[in-house]
Amino acid sequence: MKAKRILVVGVCTAGKSTLVRALRERGHQAYSVAQEHSSVPGLWRLRKPDHVVYLDVNYDAAKRRRRIFWDDDRLRLQRERLRDVRTHAHLVIDTSHLTCKQVLDMVLSTLT
Image: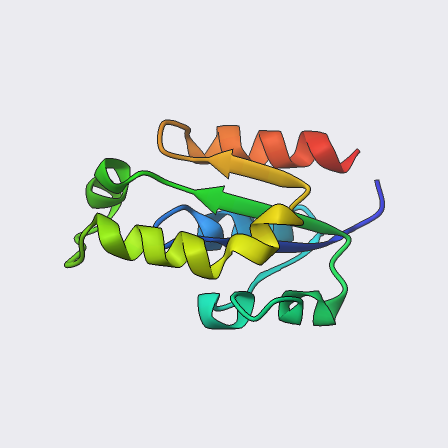
């Protein structure tokens, strides 16, 4: 399989960094962009990704993953900022109840 340029976006604690690392280990040109850049409609397209993956997580899972000092309103705001890129994503995954391996496997299965 040819290496792909994969953009990974999503809300805080959804697993973006973990997924990017795992994809890079498998030879893909994976990267994520800061949410503020993702929120400008179309700006995320500048690096011309072959594949866009959007990761989401619910508030309870976010609290389990990391000590956070914000409430569910912040997740709603992040989702609103990312609305454009989410509508163009090839794959949207709610990672709340998934392992890192399950998320990776889902992404890899869509790249073939």
